[in-house]
Image (spheres, rainbow, N blue to C red):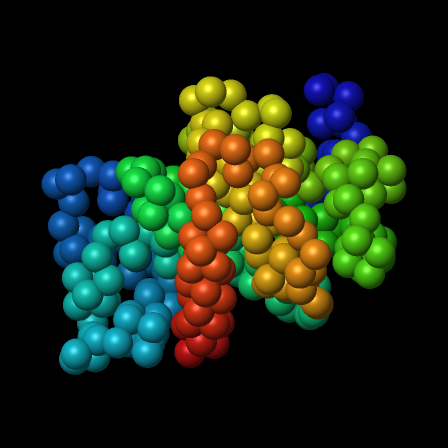
Length: 279
């Protein structure tokens, strides 16, 4: 593993950092005694973040009865869970070095997997929808970093998309490491929860998932492939993918109708998320 980390750091010189205020906000949200006024005081220290939260809270996505005029009003309108999701999504989006076609596709896919994983977890009766939302949001963090640091990575993504190659095999062959390993390393440096690192590490190789995160990884992996089938985050859909041949499906008693319903939800939430962050 040390050799792999050395190989990654030789190729990737600039490891992105998550905004300190976003981390502090997450810590405060986990404290049940935190008030909107306290959050307002902290978030106000970052003008860009403040304006983003106010802007997003007034978007058509949340359909507020009355527009929020202050950050405190926006926080109360969103609620702590939505605030946390928006902060992390906005922080991730700001990490993109540029926003060309590859970045847009990757962003679309991340949002699709995040929203889809949270919804599928709820429909299956699990209580950790927020956790798999984060897992879905950050599952391709390594691709974000590699796009910014390795110019030839765009060619690898193009080849994978065009020829339907396995992304893990293509990355390993080209660079000796994968976006999964890069993403896990970056999230580890951000001191993210161990559970999140485990979900990111195993989302392409379900066999690597420990019993403590197996169902969570199964949800993220399933939605990840479903988004590929639907074409969310890809230039074209891949209708030939048979999800019932996919190993994580064995954990869940899902019918063809269940898959159709969650597919409709993912597509609709993807379109809404696009409007939200374009607002």
